[in-house]
Length: 173
Image (tube, rainbow, N blue to C red; front, side, top):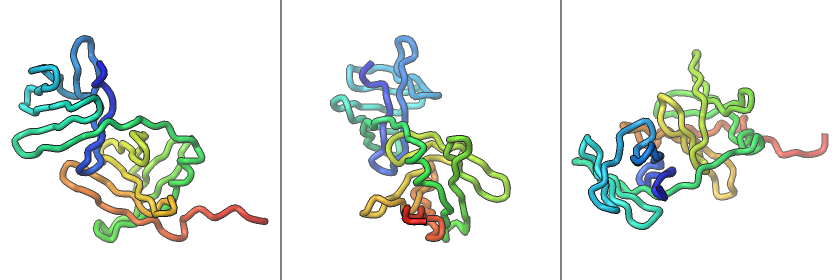
């Protein structure tokens, strides 16, 4: 089905993946979408999925109507991942997290022993199991300035990159 794939929320950047399971279209690790018409589907929980064109879907329940756009799934090079490594601080949550590469896997660390592997979703977005979606925020020059954690009940908890963990420009040694 042409509708299978990754979609990004216009509201908060969270992602949802639709997969084909036999004849059924379903939310990855979730409910089947039951066809009501060629563009309208529902879940058993009453969530309505209305597709407009090939790249946009409106997901509605009794509380919200949120537009999602198709997103290109991404694979990141080790060099691209290395550019995200550093320490990030949230004054709002009074928390420090560290992003590091562990055997080529970008991982979020939080004291004392929390380690969450980050799986790329689309450009500048990662799935963080048990945490939510981690979004990379960039300065106008393209450098990483902060990351944000987005969850069902918490939007845009920002962690600013500590200046002393910014990549150093290559130069004479």
